[in-house]
Every structure is written in C-alpha cells, then in structure tokens.
Image (cartoon, rainbow, N blue to C red):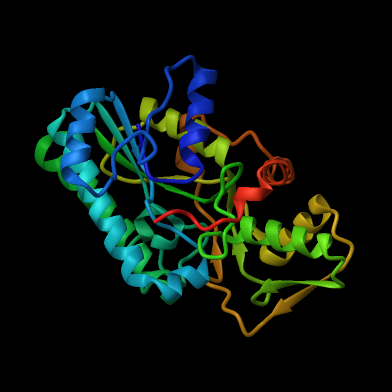
Amino acid sequence: MVAGGSSIGPALSRASARAGYRAVLTLPDDGADPSNATAVEAFFARTRPAAVVVASVLSGGIAANARRPADFLEENLAADATVIAAAHRQRVTKLLYLGSSCMYPRECRQPMRVDDLMTGPLEPTSEAYAMAKLAGVALVRAYRRQHGDDFVAAVPADAFGPGDDFSDDGAHVVAALLRRLHESKEHAAPTATVWGTGRARRDFLFVDDLADACLFVLDRYSSDVPINIGAGADVSIAELAGAIREVVGFDGALAFDTTKPDGMPRKTLDAAPLRGLGWTPATTLRAGLTATYQWFLAHAATAAAPAPR
C-alpha cells in the first residue's frame, strides 16, 4: 500500500508487477483520506497490507512551498501520524517512510550523508515541508525503538517521471520545465524562462528507479538509520534545462530569471550505502526525461490541471 505521492503509486504498481507481486493499493485513490484516522484504520483492517510506503500527501515546487507553508507542514504531519499509527496498530510487517532531500541543511557538505541531518539551518523556501518530513522520520524511528516495529526511512533524490504533477501549483523542477518548454515550442516563442541562475545542482532519480529501490529497501534494509536513495551524481539546473530543451525539441533560447530563487545551492545524496547493498538505478537522465515527456504528451489535456483538494 502507498499513502500519498502522485507518481510513486503507479510506479510501484509497475515495479511490483515486474517482480511478480500483487497490485499496489494507493491512498486516497483506493478509498481513504490519509489524514482521516477512522477511514485509514478501517482501510488497514479490511485490506491487511503486508507492506506500506508512506509518501507525501502534499508537495510542490519553490513557489508553492513559499506560498503555502502551513498547508505543507500541517497536511503532511497529519497524514504521516495517521498512517504510521494505523500501520502499528494493524501489525503491518514492514513500513517504508519516504523523506526528502530538502531535509538536509541548506549549506550541507556534499554528497549529503544521513548523519548530516539536523546539523544546520534548512533552506527557507522549503523549511515547513522539510520539518514535516523530519518529523516523519523521527516518528518512524520512535515506533521502531518503542514497539519493535520494522519501520524504516529513506531519503530519495528529486524524483520525476510519468504521473508527475505538471500544474502551476504542484510541479517540481523537471515537470515545470518540461511543460514550460513544451508550451514555448507550441507557441513558437523565441525564449523560455528558467527560474533562478541555473547554477543550483540537483540529484535526479527516475520514478521507476525509485519504485525499484523502495521494493529493494523493503526487502533488504532494516535499521533505525535512514538510507539515501539517489543516482549519486548531480546536474545543474542549466544542464537540466538544456537536456529538456533537446527532448522537447524547442529551438528557442533559455532565459534565466535571476529574480527567482535557486533554492538549495546543491543537493547530491551519498548513495554509497544503498549501492553497497547491491542496488543501482537503471535509467539515465535523458531516458527518464524522454519517457516523462512522452507521458505528458499522452496526457496533456489533464496533466497540467491543479490536483484536487
């Protein structure tokens, strides 16, 4: 079962099918609001999931985080507490909580290691969301230590792929740039705008690779120490925009709007612990961008619509 996440649920369904497992149930799509304790408890009792993945019920890019910090903090806190508590009471065999790379300090050493968590100030533009994710990691650890539940936490890199939210409010950088460059191409615009200087660097992970990693961690990892899930390399936003420009086929120029924030200067995860267990991503950035754009083209009528609230 997957709680939250616009694209990780379908990706886990695809990964589970490849691995020969049964279909994945998702909340709220399969019938329960993740923040409704009564509904979630009843859902767990009825379906008896053996494994649970807890993703974010509300996430978004820099603009959405800056505009709605209370929503990002409150809604994720409520859903995390509800789902994790129900998993404990219903004796779920394994739970994986997905944090976020924005949990790391803004000026974190690179690559970021899990012992760097909570060692410095957070990036202001995502502070509220990051605090919710840090609280979720702490709650998972608390249940493990107090009750002996096999609950673990992972910190994924910036995930993208089919099923992403391409709306103005909810899109992260890959989805936002794919849609913006596509629209610029459709309107034969001479330029397309990229937020920030383009110098910020990010570790990007295709969502199907993240789903494979989730299954791997559920099967192979058991510790109260979070584990990073990343590609282990980074690219600048300028490099990302250039790659998306090629995938989309936009012939115009890229214009960097330096009045907009960059966010954290750099986010590269230390992927060595998970690689040491035997997992590595299978999808190149270019292949992942191509698959994501193809999905967007097939769902263009609805992909950029705001997510229901």
